[in-house]
Image (tube, rainbow, N blue to C red):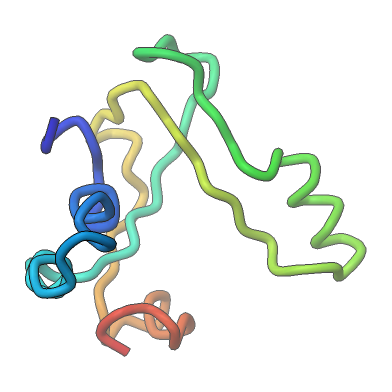
Length: 104
């Protein structure tokens, strides 16, 4: 179960409501990072890939200046190292442009 999810939030999210001390400890492990990957939504996974809201809504909303252009992605296929474009950490300009992220 632990390695079937990628990212700190996915690892500790189930513990956030039950034990605040455990959630804080799990959330403090590791180094925050932004990982940029090329996702192939036609790749078979362990179930259907999902994007919430849909990419159409995100792109149209951004074009019309409604809300921030972001979405949650549930990607259920392996991501090969060749499909990783970048990994940035606090202190890098690409990370620091998001002041609400941990480490900023």
